Structure formats: C-alpha cells, structure tokens
Image 1: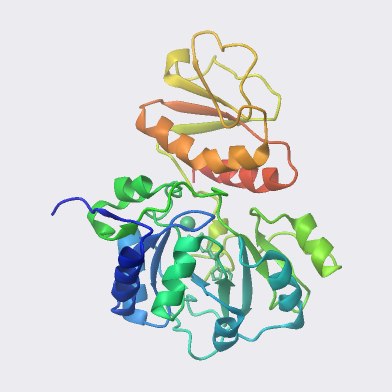
Image 2: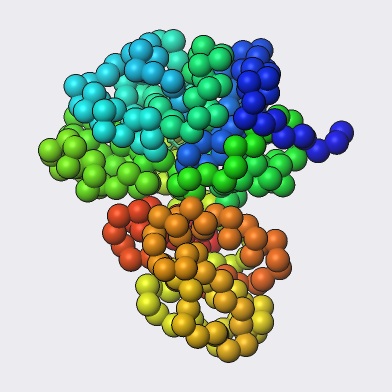
Length: 333
Ligand code: AMP
Ligand code: MG
C-alpha cells in the first residue's frame, strides 16, 4: 500500500475527515499540543483501532476532545471549579479529569470511573469536531513510548500505513502534551502531568493550592492514574544523557565526541570541540524550546548519533514540563 497522502485544512478535506471519523475510522489530526490519533470516543470499536495502531496497552486511558462545554456535561460530572478553569484556559492545552458518565466506553478510560477531557484550540481539530458533531478520543499519534509527533510527517514516518489518514495543519504551537489536572480527587485539584499551562497559572485561577504529582507507577496490569507518567516515555533510540541548565557537556564517556550530539537550550557562544552542537532556541526562550524539542530529538535519532547530551531548562513555567519530558526520554526503563 502507498504511504498516506496528507489531507489539508480545506472544507472538503475536513468534511472527509469528519465523515471517516463518524464512520468509525481513525484520523490523525493536528492540535496545538502535539498531533493526535483521533477516533469517535463514543464508538468502542473505533477507539480499539487507536490502541491497535499505537501498540498502546489497554490500561492507558485516552483524553476525550470536545468542541464545547455542553459536550463535557454529556460525558462527565462538571464540578464548580471547572467553569473558572474553562474560562481561563479553554480552548487550550489543559486536560481535566472528571467523574465519567455511563455514555463513555470503558475502553476510553481503561475502566477507570473518571474521564480526561480537553477542549483543544487548534482550528483543524475544532472544525472537525464541529463537522462530525461528536467527541474525539485522541492520544498522541506515535507508536506507544516513542517521541510525540509535532508535524504531520512525524506521524507518517512513525506510524506509516497504520495511520492512513493524516490532516496536515503545520507544526504544533506548544509542542508538548497538555497539562493534566485531576478534579475528581477529594483531597483537591492535583497535577497529574505538567504541560504548557503551569501549576502557578492553575493556582492563580483556582485561588487554592494544586497538589503535586499523581500516583507513581502501579503494579503491572493495574489502571494508571496517569500513564503519561510512566517513567520511560517519549524515548528516542539513542541514549539521552541530561545535564543541568548551564552545565558544560561531558565528552569523555562511552562514545567518541563525534558520535555525540550536544543539545543546548539556547545557541551556545562557542562550539563544542569535536562534537556537533544543536540548540532548542536562539535565546533560551522555554516556550520555543518546548515547541522544538520533540522534532529535534527525532531528527538527531534519525541522524544516527549514539548519544544525545541534552541541557535541561530552568525549572520554572513551561520549563517544568519540558524537563519532565526530557527526563522520561532519558529514562532507560
Ligand atoms: P496521551 O494523549 O498519549 O498523552 O495520553 C493521554 C494521557 O491522559 C495519558 O497519559 C493518561 O494518563 C491521561 N489520562 C487519560 N484518562 C485519564 C483518567 N481517567 N485519569 C487520569 N489520567 C488520565
Ligand atoms: Mg503519548
């Protein structure tokens, strides 16, 4: 079979995408975070195709994407806190975990009594949601555990024929997966995954503390509170070695300098002798670095470097989420 053609952001192509989704097919769509592999969230057979294409374990629940607040109310119980968050951050890169209603298939939530919901901002997925008149389960459009896709060609490169329909909406604005906030926890709101919306921003809007971190890995086979929290994730094949912000690279290791890609948060003042330098932004802006990180890791992985030596960001704002993904990419198991 030939590799998939890209659909474009045209009325005709998005109407086709919506029709395919209504008919139970899977379609890769751009969002402002990363590209998602979407299916009708209320059609368990369609959702099963996502798990199959990604090789994703069934214990890993999916995020449901909606066009409006009425759709949220069909899927889940909406606590009072949600309206303030929605006003401040939706449409946008914030996912909330709510008590699910009967209508949501257990496959979507890995059997959990809660469902993760997000109203995305990218015009392509919004138009497709309106055209199909439904809700879309859409995890990142990559093989399970590999680097998330931030461009249409990343989806094709890593899923090939498993994603026969891909809409090309250009590179993603944020380049990191959404922030996940648990709102169905009696102890109060809890940050399950850092993302483009920072904990400080959430606390400012909610006017109360946001608890840190979700449950860590659980015993095999048990549903995860946030499987995005698996320690090893977002992983290139090359070894990823991290260094603290501002620290120099270390070239005396297992590999020769020319097998090492030295990655900086900002363009370095001097070349690293013997090795090749790459940078995530010109000036150290963490939002730019976040937007570029997955594409750069993919490029370097494909270029055959044995080791990627990556400088961590300053641990604040979106730098927290960026460092979270880098640490997972570096985890060996
Ligand atoms: P992905 O779209 O591949 O980044 O994965 C979706 C993320 O949403 C996963 O990491 C899940 O942990 C998280 N998620 C989905 N549903 C739930 C839920 N009911 N409770 C907690 N986390 C969830
Ligand atoms: Mg993912």
